[in-house]
Image (cartoon, rainbow, N blue to C red; front, side):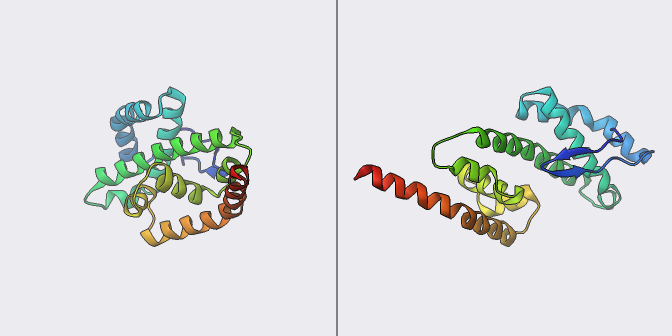
Length: 172
């Protein structure tokens, strides 16, 4: 764990306070390798896995005192790890979409959505998850997931309408 500040999706990731709580250090030493192997299997590169697990442990540390009082510490930590690894996949997808050009601007508009709206659209319409599953992954209520999906559709609607209009004109 380092003391520097990293950028993530335009928002700074807070640095870990030093010294770390002894019980957190023990947890980190015990579980870091397994979490890293999981992230490596999902993300495919060591750099991406290290970045994801570093972010996950920073989040775990931010909530450490609360997590310690939970009866399901391991499940709570695992949810943070899974959510963080998933966000790395979505960040990579966002970067890839921004470089695609289908002539309509839809990919660029999708990549330009705010992070939560982007994640919800990808998880719902590309990964085909239900609202309940998306809310679990993102740590949001189902109504908040639906709200972000509606807002994303509102932002994408003008581009989608132009694309649909062009396709109709091309078929005439």
